[in-house]
Each structure stands twice: as C-alpha cells, then as structure tokens.
Length: 223
Image (cartoon, rainbow, N blue to C red; front, side, top):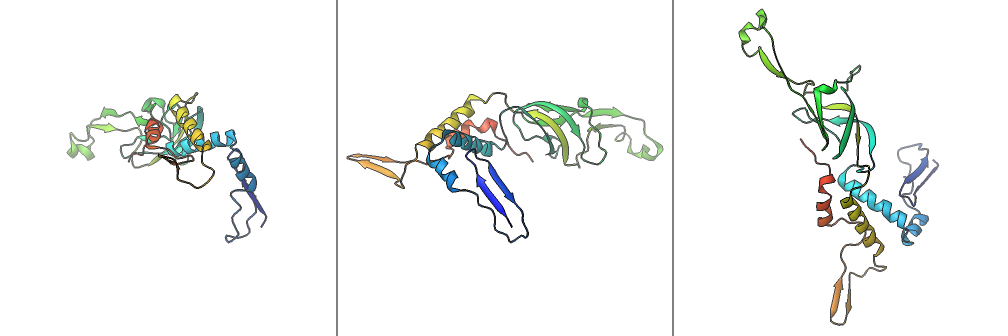
C-alpha cells in the first residue's frame, strides 16, 4: 500500500492512498510541517480552526448562504427538519421512493428557523356502501399531503447567513486571541510576590458564556 496524508495549514486533510487490505496502517494525520505552522502562530491557521470549532458546536456551516440537496428526517407529526437555523428558500421537496414527484409548494410551509410543515387539508365525501357503517367518521377527515410513516424527504434548500452574524464573529475572535496567548510551558499558574495568577483553559475551548451566545445558531434535535 502507498499512502500519504497530512493536515495542511488551512486545516484540510489531504490523503492519497491505495488500500490493499483492512489491516493496512492508517495514513498520518499530522506532519512536522503542520506542527511548525501551529508553533509559528499563523493567523490563518487559528482563524480556520476557530471557525471549525464553532461549526462543530452549532452542527452546520452558518455562513455563507449555500444551496444543498439532502435527505432530511421527519418528526412524528410529519415536520421535515432541515440542518439549519437560517432557512431562506426551499427549492424542492421530493419523496424518497423511485419515481417520486416534486411536491406542490402549496402543500407545505417553510419556517425560516429550519423546518418544513405540511398544510393540513379538510375534505368531505359521501360514504360508499362499504363504508356506510363508519358514518360520520368516514365523511370528514384531516389529510396530510405526505404520509407520516415515511421518515424522510429529499429537499433542495438555500440556507446560511450572507454575512457572518456579529455574535459569531466575536466568539471566533475570542477563541483566536486566547489560542494565540497560550503558554509556552506546562505551568498552570504563576506567582509573583503576593500575587498569584491561575491560567484558565487555553486553546480553542468554548466557555459556557460563548456557548450561550451561540445557542440561537445551534441545531436542536426534535423527536
């Protein structure tokens, strides 16, 4: 097996490998050059690392505005949950089975907070001889445009902020500043005369206050 792998200064993992068996060694994740970039306090490196940390916490890309096509899960009441908290447009919704047709946009309502609800319809009809004993239950019923026993839809949608919100920018810059001020050694505190200073967490670690400020941008699972 021939394999090379590295995490570039931009934070992207590059790997070229030909695996001949499941027991072959995994390519290296980091290199000496990557560590040298980290030690040099390269600003681009830390900006991208901070962005990745925030996106990992929020569980979506946040910015810029992008159009994606994805299979999206549905809740028990038939609501389609999209991986976003800033939905700007729904291009199409298609059932996942073969030959599924694009749904009429009038049958659903997108919510900018990140989900799609189906519009309930109410309709009536005269009972047939076979269902006459169900009168009046079989006369008027609520009907959803899509059956709830199917658990996902193929959705093409546009989401994300055109400009990164200031709250997110502030958290990112705070992470970068703290990471760039990391101590060179392993000391946890410093004492000078009667004064003692204890280091907090260094590196790209979100504080509780920062997590709170990012709450409105974070995906929330709904059963």
